Amino acid sequence: MKGSHEMKWEENVRKVVPYVPGEQPQKKNVIKLNTNECPYQPSPMVEKAMKEMDYRTLRLYPEFPEKTPLTKYLAEYHQTEEEQVFIGVGSDDVLSMAFLTFFNSDRPVFFPDITYSFYDVWADLYRIPYEVKPLDADFCIRKEDYIGKNCGGVIFPNPNAPTGVLMGVDEIEEIVKANPDVVVIIDEAYIDFGGTTCLPLIKRYDNLLVVRTFSKSRAMAGCRIGYALGGKKLIRYLNDAKYSVNSYTMNRPALRLGAESVKDEAYFREICGKIIATRQRSEKELAALGFTFPKSYGNFIFASHEKVGAKEIFEKLKEQDIYVRHWNRERIDRYLRITIGTDEQMDALFAALARI
Ligand code: PMP
Image (cartoon, rainbow, N blue to C red):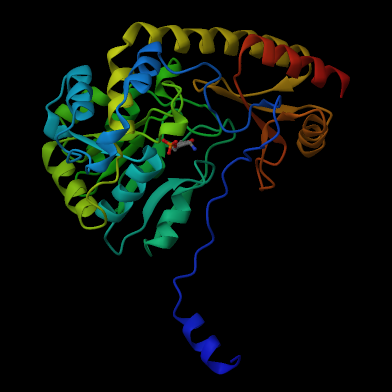
């Protein structure tokens, strides 16, 4: 039966405009430079563990997220205690939990106007008031915007996405110090590509949460692993919220494979080094082709062409099965975010760009 009843329940639906991730084309042989994945395989230790995994263990629930080998290795790796590590299903899960847990006041949470476009989605979903703070003309976060403003919390990525611009640890410390009554979240999804982490600050500031992911520098986006580090009290509150939604968010294979990745430091350093080297080479190539871009500390470059429009380049690249990211949004519609792939993939990109 159609009619008024249908309309009534719809009025009470929690309506959201979801985040739209980059396309995942199903075609083979595409050059995929649109979602900041790693072009290299995960560590051989991950491969070995995956082959040795016993499917029969899937019968059992996984370990409690707080006490897993993954949390243990992460704590050792970062020289913290296990109670300072929170793990989740990708950093999206961790960040979403952190929004739900820590941004719970009437005052607006602050984040940049140009940043990870999931932040406003979570804020809307959880009915958290927020205010965006414009980046300056060079795409830098203006630290003054986050100091002495009586906000309900602060979050931004460092380096920022999609710009790749890095903020220094001293400036981050000033922001954390100036906001002792609220939680400051630094999303370090891309910190392993040459930036300096603000992690040491968690020892001194109990209102700082640092979030990391296995999706970029550990080449494990498909495994969905993210984590947060902070004071024990922050992590306790995060776990309380998590256990109020779903106790076992992390599956057994992810917990096992993630732990193997953390153990293989040499391989991790090797692939990060390769991406940084390819990024440096790409900067030269892109500049020679007439692109300008802020200096990037991520595994991507945010580039704009002096003559040709970004949308046009985006579409022409797609016709040639090369995927990059473009947003039809004010201030950034002239830019393309290009993930750093292998040297061969980048060469194919430069050749296609030269033709365009
Ligand atoms: N933070 C930032 C800044 C990102 O760009 C991404 C990737 N989309 C994420 C967090 C989430 O990554 P994941 O959920 O794969 O850990």
